[in-house]
Image (cartoon, one colour):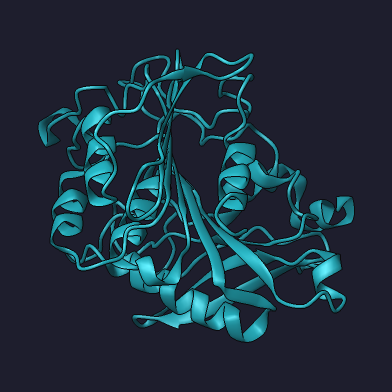
Amino acid sequence: MWIWLTLLGCSALFGGGDEPTPGDATSPPDEVVEEAPRRGKAGKTKRKKGKKGGIKDGAHQLEISYRGGRRGAIVHVPASIANGGGKAPAIVMHHGGHGANGMQAAKLWKEQVEKDFILIFPDGQTVEKKAGWMPVNGELDYNVRFVEALLDEALKRFPIDEDRVFAAGWSSGAQQTMRLACLSSDRFQAFSVVSQNMEFDTRDACAAADYTPRPMQFIIGDSDPKNPWEGRGPEDSHSSPGRIGIQETIDFFVKKNGCKATAKPKKLRGAKVLERRYDTCRHGEIRWLLVEGGTHAWPGGTQGVKDLSATEESVTFFRAHGL
């Protein structure tokens, strides 16, 4: 694995913490600001190459043509799978921020790269100023269809079991994950959403969508200035649309999945986390972890709470649903 990390360029992949560097002096001091777009030509993505100009030892660059440009992902295939291990499940992990940098998400999963599943880290878009996973030209499903096309190509090139594909995301990547849950439920088996309330347009699209609800996990901090408990209007944001509150986000999917409306909170062992399981559902359970004192950061990462790992919780949740 260390060879792979060196070839990717450790400073780009795993250095500097798990969230983008703050870049807005007007933001609250405890808020991690999502990364500004790294602009190149429209539709193009830029990567920092490894020392030998490529990504090897299990990690591959996958690029496809999409809407007149090139977009891609990093795909990591463990040696046990690459060496004739048969078809394996896959996790698609979406980075946060407004850039197009799958490596930003990859560093959060460095302890998982040689497990029994394939990891896919797609890049967000750079077509519009508010890039990353933001809609393009008002098309809410712009990035959803990109991920579907990317997954189609990945299924051709890698030994992925198409019936065992899962999606996770942090921050704006978590908003993308919720859109996949609503608009592409037939392609994924379960979802893990970290540090994100539901945006108004996502809620409206989900409410109108004809889809099969899937198991959903939410990991949200109760002190996240980007995602306050009560939500926020678009006039309160300098970087992204308005969104509903935390409880309202959970309630939306609880209703969609046909769960009982309440779940008794339970303290996780050794963690400042309240767990609620809505497991009496018609279409798949809802698991909600409310992190006490959690801000806009990946739990278990450099800037997140240390007594909970969002990566491990996501893997555990996915294993409970077929990973």
